[in-house]
Image 1: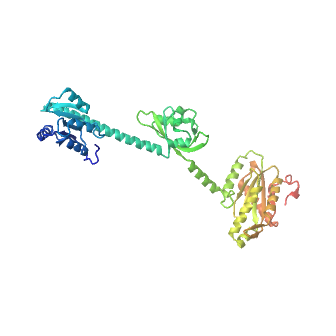
Image 2: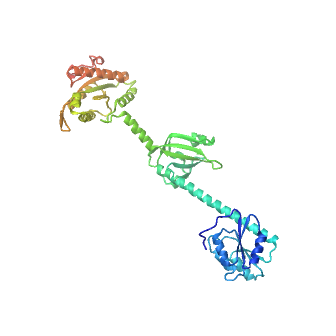
Image 3: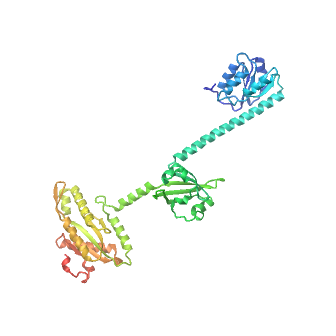
Length: 452
């Protein structure tokens, strides 16, 4: 007996009176008339079931003795329906019932028996009490349904949130974890419960939970945020995140910690930084990157006696290649030169392309002769005739070298000195190297045959 098409629910209570005598229905309507009660009537058991299918009924006043289908059969069918199984029933009868009949009525689901004629002062309070109870029950069911929907919605949000979400007790232990944080930390949700949050916090370093800024913010009722935090995953991998720690209201004695994975942002930032200091053609450091790398090295050399040598290289014949064979061949030539330089550079050396066909190389040396030997090696390598894109390409390189002690090194001075020495090499006939002589004492150049 399931309802498919139902009338809208009334704001008041709905009663169904079932009796096979029309005069009884009329008298019951008059007796029970109230503004907040809607009285429905049915003259048979079949008609009663039809009314129950089409209406939300709060109470049924059901005659026992009716032709075709008596009240007991109607009650049994009502109790068999999911929708009307809890609808209260008061049996009405004109004759005193035997004990067996009364027991059968209660077994069918009746809440009371009333004998006709009815005393208004007895009937109406009984009806009112049952309707109020039914109204309260229905309100509780609606509230329960709404709560279930809200809980399902909240659970769905937490389950599907991209951000990691933790509920952390005031003692710093995890009470709740959603699947996103489980994936980030690579720990099952169940295994996170009861574990101190500090077990996963790499940065900021917090030796004691109760002395931490997170806990102090919780005590003040404030939201504490860390934009550059790092979490330690179960496999010791470090995860950059943004943390937001907000106290929960009421008596929860906990905070909700939102965790935003910043891995992709950090990777993108690193890639952008790398692009900013890298020459896109050769993959070497560009001028900015070379300057930054060298200045970092020199800043550590303030009290050092380490000898530094800066090689400033300018290709010979590159303009002719670019103009006669085109920029594509020129780019191939520059990439090939960069490969030769990278192949000759040693670990710890800093190599860069700082202009069109200009390269620089900073060396750590024990003796200036090491810089001279490397310069000779580079001149020999680059002077080899190359076959690029079906064309024979001939290049050379002129190199200027500036040498100084680490404590006295200044990048701009080294660049100007090495650049001046490079032009001396070009004036001397190209494909040679020259030291910046003002920086070399007679003791340094013990054997002039080493220097060109």
